Length: 190
Image 1 (tube, rainbow, N blue to C red):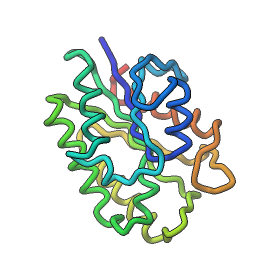
Image 2: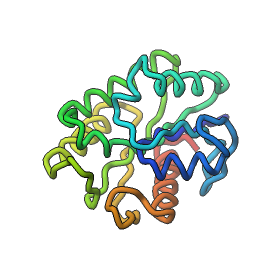
Image 3: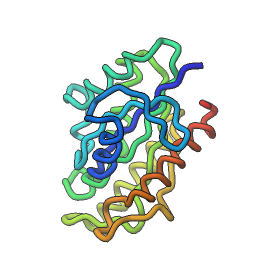
């Protein structure tokens, strides 16, 4: 079986670390990171979910990367995204928008895509966010995981955040990568 694993990353250090590993954003190369199958990184740090909705350049780029995989490829999207949505006033609709984006990708790629969606850390802080807006995004992620048939939520608890209580440290990123890989196993992909 052929696999394609994609990172949809809204955290700048996740985007920068992963893209550095493959020498540039949007590059399609094999990345062996804690057991992942060949991985494509499509990541831009600090992006809210609105930047990933149908018709946007990031959505179109992700769609095209998925379409570039073989027809027999099983595609897992590992999502490290949501922090910016805690401070942009759109927190209440996060879950519905995430479900819409995933549904649009399924339709536009004619695939049954799998998701390993990372929940927000309970330690996460972001200027302009409040405990209520952060909880609204967490609730939206729970809604997405409960509603979409091919989503497994990844826990961030215990993954190390840096001193800013927002970005993961290198060890934290590796922990999250291991958990996304484990989610793929739990979903029966590899």
